[in-house]
Structures are given as C-alpha cells and as structure tokens.
Image (tube, rainbow, N blue to C red; front, side, top):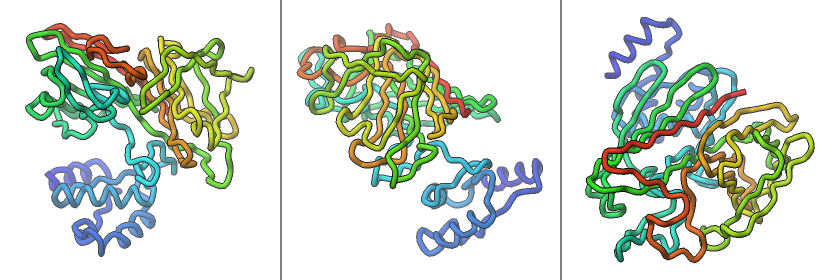
Amino acid sequence: MAARTLDMLFKETDGVIIFPTNLILSASSGAEEAKQMINLTKPKYLLPVVGEYRHQYNMVNIAKSIDFKDENGMSYIWNGDPAYWFGQNPLLFPIVGNLKDGKIRMDHQEYFMGRHGFARDMDFELVSQTETEVRYRLNSNDQTLAKYPWPFRLEIAYRLHGDSVDVIWEVTNTGEEDSYFQIGAHPAFYYPDYDPQTSERGFLSFDRSEGLQCIRIKEKGCVDAETKYPLEIPENGLFPLAADTFDAIDTIMLQDGQIGRVALHRADKTPWLSLSFNAPVVGIWSPPTKNAPFICLEPWYGRCDRAGYEGDYRDKDWVNRLAPGERFSSVYTIEIA
C-alpha cells in the first residue's frame, strides 16, 4: 500500500519528500527530528503511509503538536489538546448531549450510555474513496446493542468542492421494528486571532439577527427547556466573542430551526469560515473558564435531556424515528471564507 501510494504521488508531482524511516518508526527519539523536518520542509500536505498504524498515528500526533497548517499557513480544526478538550470533530450518535442519570429508559429497561453516545469512540470502516469524497460506515454489533437496542447502519461522508466540504450523514434502520436516534456534529475551530493575553475572540454572525432565543443547561448537563433567553445581536449583525463568553452559560443553544447558517469572524470583523445546515438545533460552545483557543459550532438533530426527564427514550425531545428499512440523510457544509 505504501509503495503504491508513493508511486502514484511521484507520477503526479516532483515535489515529494520522503522522511527518513527512523523518524517515523521511533515513538520518542525521532520525534524532535521529525518536528524539525516538518518545519524545515514546510510541506503542503503530510501523508503518513509508512509503518504500522501506530507509527502513522504517532506521526500525525507529532504534526499536531507543532500545529501543522495548510498551504496558506492557516489551521482551522482544533488539534485536540486534552489540556482544553480532547475532541476535534466527533460524530454524536445515537444521542446528543447528556442523558439524565446517563440512561436510556425504554419498555421498563435501562441502557447506560455516556455523553454524546458511542459512535465517536468506535472504528468506522472505509467504504469508498475518490479524489473529492471519502465515505465511512459503522454497523451495529453486540457492543452497540448492549447500550442501544436498535440495529442500524451509520455512514458519514466528506465531499470536497472549492473551498467547502460537505459532511453527509446517513442512518438506516436495519432492524424489524421502528428505531429512534439523535445525531449531531461537534466540530471545533481555532479562533483565528487567539491571544491568551487578551479577551477578544472575534465575532459570530447568523442568517437571522432578530428575535433569537436560546435555552441553557440547568443541571448535570441537562437543559431547562422552558426558560428562553434572548440572544442580543448588535445592529451590525456581529455577536462579540470574549474569553469569558461561555463561563456562566456553558452553551449557546438555539432550537426550533431558528438559524440555518453561522459564521465565525476575525477580530477585524472579516469572515473566517461558516457552517450551513438544516438541523433544528444548534449548539455553540467553548470550554468554560479555560480561556480556550477554539469554538465549536454544532448542528444537531437532537439535544440533551431536559432537566428531570425520566420518560421513555422514544418520547424525549428532538428524537428521530425510522421505520424498518427507512433511511435518514442530512448534510451540513463548512466553507472557508
């Protein structure tokens, strides 16, 4: 596989640089040399193809540790530093957010599940790959059925076009009775002008600036769904972000399809990137009290339990139903300004 990949690259371009094998296969002694090599060569792309998976994974982490950036010197997706938050862009399935007491209740049975479900912690299989699209699949198995009683097929695809990427979700009910699920995104984006010594973090804009109302977390990750808080947008249409924006509220949560687009702007108010979606619920989050370098813009088909909810999973807020054989499909788009 590595040889075929290298042959293909050499046929397409004369700008291929092969790192010495010892830098790739060494877990520690070659790390500093690998960092120096990346900084000296400043590659447009970095493709770990040599060695076993653990060696390729190690090279990816080395590149992340020095904030490897794209050809324009810009980095968009958060690097997953656990000092702030270990995630980058997890797929949330079959729940979004927290369950009361960490349990799904159905037909007098209880199933335990952690925040945001199990999909983000599981290995997907590669289904197909072209120059502009890659698709992955997760099928239900004994491990998932122990936590979530419905068979399913979950696919996620990434499709490139211009300065945008479409993220496509497909959920199919492969069982013999109705199934229920939630699904959501959790992409984390760097603040483009982050400076830990200052408070300003840029701005957000929405495709609607008047009459927006949000709900807030009340207790143990569950929401007060009844109390609405106005999201005040200045006349210029730009909602200011600061280091302490999320300290008291944790998450800005907009439901009922109030918006279909959110954009992140630099400190000078120029656009940086945007997300477009059809999801009915949107969460906006950055780790409270951590002065974190990133913000998450999250379209959701679902959300956490309301505080005190102890009902059947099938009756919870924002749950989606599929008949046997039925397929749910949705897409959201990330566009670089």
